[in-house]
Image (tube, rainbow, N blue to C red; front, side, top):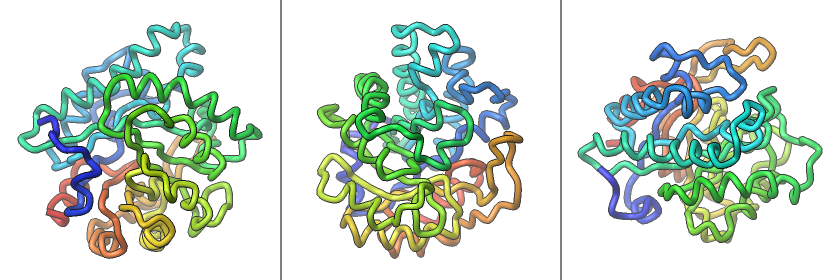
Amino acid sequence: MEPTRPLAAVLAGRTVVLDGGLSNQLESQGCDLSDALWSARLLADDPGQIEAAHTAYVRAGAQVLITSSYQATFEGFAQRGVRRAEATGLLARSVELARAASRSAERPVWVAASVGPYGAMLADGSEYRGRYGLSVGELERFHRPRVEALAAAAPDVLALETVPDADEAEALLRAVEGSGVPVWLTYSIAGETTRAGQPLAEAFAVAAGNDQVIAVGVNCCEPGDVERAVQIAAEVTGKPVVVYPNSGEEWDAKGRGWTGHGTFDVGRVRDWQAGGARLVGGCCRVGPQQIQGLARSVG
């Protein structure tokens, strides 16, 4: 069911459940994501698998679906010989597939168009480090065309996510100006700093006072780092907080695999809510089963 109210309008009154990791669900469906384009490859090669993954999260109780555009960029597609017009269509398709899956629900389901960091395009793990050697202006010029293409597909919100660096957050917020689409901003973090080492209070301050930003927070981080990050985000910005940590395992960029043990615990959601979290879900390695547990806890 397509929502009739803006997402921002419901956050003051209740907590909204996001989906979980798209890549792990696609892999559980038998998809090979070893390509540098990751899940974005399927936008061209097998879009039905993406819609099926979104539908699995709808069935689990997710109220927001995040699109498969995290690693979808004009530059990345060009390296595969995809021309600009076709790439624009694939970005729009990412929104359309999530919207199609949302219609299978008997409740409103919003669509958030994923805008991943510059480092995601490089496919070398640098999105977990930031500090690419590019200026804010250069990063803005990189992000703006993709933002414009996604905004034209009419998502409910743009998810500026897994941002490792406050400078890139500033660039992203510049890039979305004039898009007419509300945004949320989430950092990838280590403890109480961004992955680039900036204090979270300074990083969240980038979004303070920006009315286009409907929520701020963290994603793709250790579950144990969430509670304090929620408190800082709420204190600095006064905005609703969005959190969707990963499973607690760590990504090995060289080995292209996950290591360690999962620590994601749906029992923590009450603490997140107490601190100001109003959008809660999961990222990498968090699947429909955990999202179902979150939905039950929140609901």
